[in-house]
Length: 443
Ligand code: GLC
Image 1 (cartoon, rainbow, N blue to C red):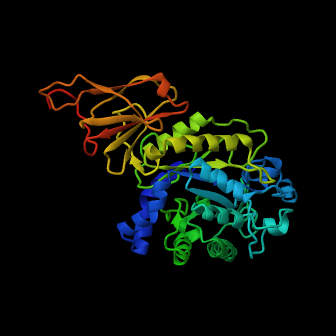
Image 2: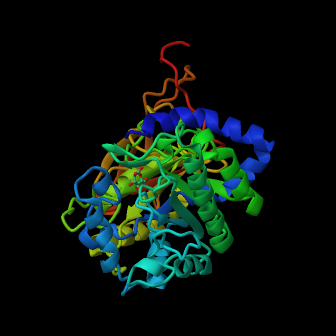
Image 3: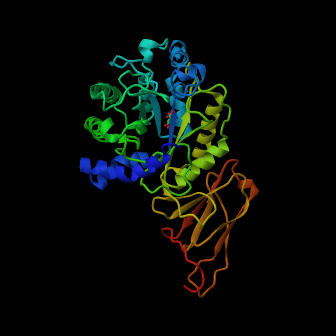
């Protein structure tokens, strides 16, 4: 929330800044963003020592909910003993997601790889004793899935980082510039290590709100990444130098203004695993919001939080599996589509085929009986229930022969055709979709 507004504002600026910097043509950005735009669904994974006691990732000590020492004692309990990266990758793939983003280091500073830097990492400092990133990224790539690395710019465990807990600051940058330089060198080296070791398709930064672009040296961070991989995509949390917008937990009601966007969202209330958090979102709720995001031209980055031993809670698996089954059934209405028609024509999410000649309507769970579309100028060639491939009839009501204003389209959806989560109708139109959005009457 704290960053939602600033991200939206920053997003208007950032692409201009970064493009001017790199002299990228609109066509080459489009080419680089293509897979992302088509992905629609990614799986976010927050895994770290915070899963041992099941406390807020990093924030629990920052907000003084638990002493720092006790928080860090979780290092001793982080085993990854049942970690099965192939199973994780299978789960991601079965959900229908086209990419996964995994925490490489959260604000607590604990790296999930064997960083060369003199700082906490799971290989040196936990019983897990191994690089947890590589095997998973390898499994993703085997399945042609894209690899994303979450990296926190903030590192509250570093003595050369200025912030620590919400009520304690270590130093002021202007008083100790050399100390800040030391930190910059450190975090940028870690990013370079990630580039070298894993060559991610997507860099997912977090925590930029604690400093500005000059302090982070966003331009340098961005250009180092692109020097290694010009096709790497960077999320919108590099203080103005990312490629797309990242609203967090807050579902946009209207279509975000920027070309590419991604809603990141938890399955319960928290990013990491927490024993006490049982507020699971239901498959129906996730599917409804997923359709809404895709209808608005965005991606959903849906988070799971594995336990310290690497097992994924059943409730999370269940949501991903149900979402996967639904995606499979409705594949063509989601993947390979573009954002739908403007609001007001149909009461629910919509998407369009790339040539705009098929319109997909997403019906709220259990909706049957007549549904209605307003202002559709095109003739409808055919209506199908997606996944069942049953044809439906329609009726045009209120079309006046001498008026160009289209009538209302009513489609009767039989109870027997209804999907338990969301039914999708495909309207094959004569030509690309054409809409009437006027005030009625004579003009
Ligand atoms: C936030 C939080 C963090 C979480 C992230 C995911 O900004 O600081 O705990 O990892 O969002 O988007």
